[in-house]
Image (cartoon, rainbow, N blue to C red; front, side, top):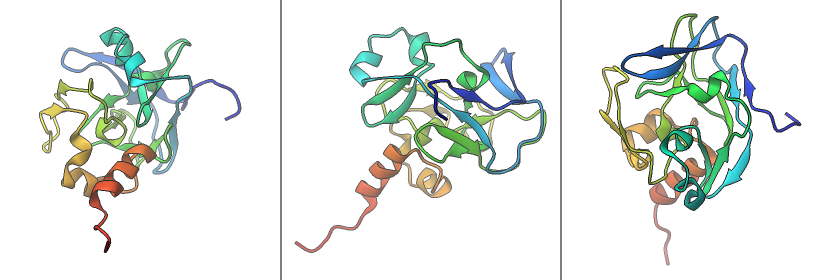
Length: 173
């Protein structure tokens, strides 16, 4: 992608539910590996992110240890993809979200925010309804061994580096 425009795959629709608020549903089937989103925008630091309103922070994508994307353009369906403790999408790089498995038409499109978020302000009660729901999402969830195993290969690069740094065996000194 050459320009600074966020890519939102055709066939995504924003819906609103009483429990989850806005989210995204697939209007068509998506194949495993198909690109769902490629986010673009202006990069800001966590300090700058903390000066934004809660609503503005909800639209950020963490792309590095201290880097967040702000979209100054009109929001697209991918900007409303919800968290799930049992997601169907994951990252192939810092800004590209793909289907981790086939997604059926009518199914919610989701990713586990632990795949990209390690920041101090991502804390909320989860209502995803999954049998494996953690009930609470925070910026430290990437540290959970079961998530590291479940999402191996699907974490954004900055999170994968953090996981590697805490799981690598200590070398002989």
